[in-house]
Image (tube, rainbow, N blue to C red):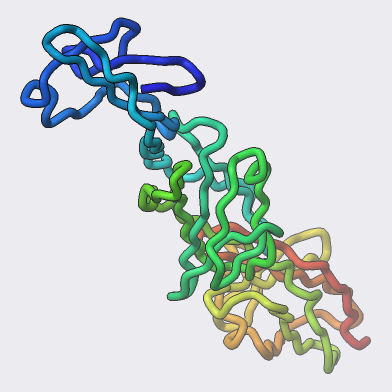
Length: 273
C-alpha cells in the first residue's frame, strides 16, 4: 500500500505499518484493511515469496479511494425574504472532498448551482473552498426550504445525503397601506401583500393621538395584541368611528409561518373635517 508517496505494508492485525509481512493467501483472505484515512487514495500492489525466500518483485499497482464520510446536517442561518446562508460541515473528510446540496421546496427537488441559486438540475459538486460562504439566492418569501448535503470521494462514489434541516424565509416587507374614501368618520384601507406566499398573515396598526391601536376582526380599534389575518380578509377594510379632521398613521406587519414579523412603510391620512 502507498498513500501520499509513503509505502506501507499490511500487518497481521490488518492495519498498515512500516514492516513488510509475508503470509499465505489462506491467511490473508478475506483481507479487510482497517485504519485507513477517509477519502484518501491508496495504490495497492502485491509481492510473492517462495520457500527459499526468493522474491517476485511487486506487481503493477491498482488504486482506489476510501469512501468519504457522510456529511453532517448543514447549518442554516440569517434567512431573509430571498436568501438563506448555508454552511457545509465536512466532518473528517479531507479538503478535496466534493459536495452537492439538495433542497426540497413545495414538493419539488432543487440543487444548489455555482451561482448559489437553486435549479432542477444538474447536481453540482464542489469542495468547500468553492462551497464557502454560501448565500442561497432567489428564494421566495415565507416558504419553507429543506436542505441536505452529500459527499463524493475521489473515485466519484457518493455517500448518500445527510440528515435534512429546514428553515423558512421571512416575509417581504408589505407595501404601504392604501387609504381611500375618507369621510368625517371613516377611512377605507387595503393592504399590499407583494410577493408573500398565501400562508402569510398580516396585522394592521394605527398611530393617532400618541397612542397605538390594532384593527381587530370586526374592523374596530383595540389596544391589546395585534390580530393577524390573511391578505384576502384584509383586502378591503372599512374603518368607522373615526374622529373628524384627525390624522391616522397606518402600517401593516406580515408574519411568516415561524412567527417572524416584517413591518411595512407607514402612511398617514386625514379624515374630513
